[in-house]
Amino acid sequence: MQNYILMTDSDSDLPYALKVQYDIPVVYMPYTLDGKEFFDDLGQTLDHKSFFDAMRQGAHPTTSSLSEMVYEEYFEPILSQGKDILFLAFSSQLSGTINSLRAARETLLEKYPERTFIVVDTLSISGPQTLLVLKAHEMYRAGESIENVAKWVEDNKLRAQAYFTVDDLKYLQRGGRVSATAAALGTLLDLKPILTETREGKLAAAQKVRGRKKALGFIVDKAAECIDDPTESIGLVLHADAREEAAKLAIMLHDRIPDLTIRIENVGPVIGAHAGPGTLAFCFIGKERTL
Image (tube, rainbow, N blue to C red; front, side):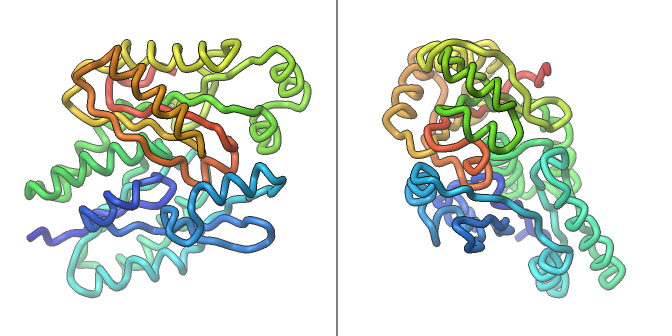
């Protein structure tokens, strides 16, 4: 039995079934919907469909950071029991919450100086982060040391990729990702930006195409271009209450990359708050990011 705990946060959109299957502790990140604060417990308190239905009806969800004290409440019981921690955090470039996480780590190591507490900035969020967590946990279950697992994640984190497209640009506009003029023009011309996670851990447009069909085709092309070994990892098709289109994308990917195992899962409320209902993504481990 390992003497350390491998943890992550809910911004990974780790599927709840896999969290339970592998008993992976998850720090639940906060968001607000219709003036009420929730914690993203992977769809257990508020299911994903209800969240996106609320957005369709005009709700404006917002996301926020956790305090150092809340992080300490998650971590101290583990350290006090004599176990070390490896925490795989979502990208430092998408929120300042990692500063609270690191502050909690420093405070607790002063109290438990004999313990090891490693934080890895995955430079990812959502599906790519989940894929890193699942691979790391596979190594964890195989008995690899905390140092070896942390090193693998550091060495391979830029190989975790995502390409996603939104259904309505107004949600990106609301979050400041595109201007009002660009959103209006894009809607008029049916432009679909394809977003990706960059080498710096930010979100950026990889391409703009006209129409949903071309957007899905671009995602499939990028997957085929970037995946060297389809048996190395699963692929994740994520959707924001767009299961039929997600199934269609999965079929397109399977036809193009038949040896790849694909799971269809949900986009969580943190990404969903900014991207909106109808968002589709494909996440995989392949070649290193180029942007």
